[in-house]
Image (cartoon, rainbow, N blue to C red; front, side, top):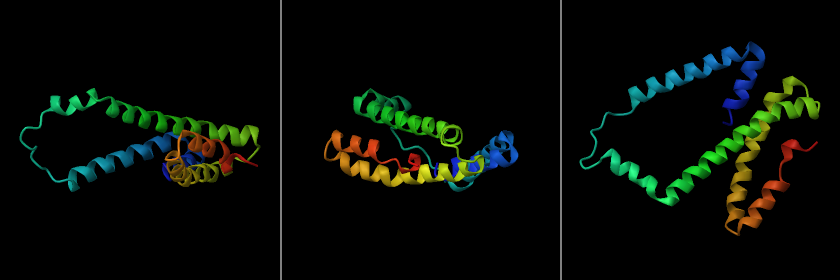
Length: 140
């Protein structure tokens, strides 16, 4: 996400959204071939059944962990969706600066997540205050 979103924005601004989608598709195909070539073909261990593997989803902790992951990534992508219009229409930055603003927003998220994880050990109140107060990419 640190590289892909700003790079996709740059390609889209220079060449159009269709080229961006084509580039992403090519990366996906390259990844598919890379996996097929580099991942060894191992036999499945005995006693492993799909039903047994799916039974893990009966555990509430597994469901909560997956739900938090989905909500977290969904929130990040939702925020990314609105960064460009906010920075151009509301703040008044040039369209050409969007790539770097996205990079700043995404890169600043990594240390913020690390700090939030440390603060979360102290309780939910500490981690929430960090998230609300520290958003340097939106201050002007």
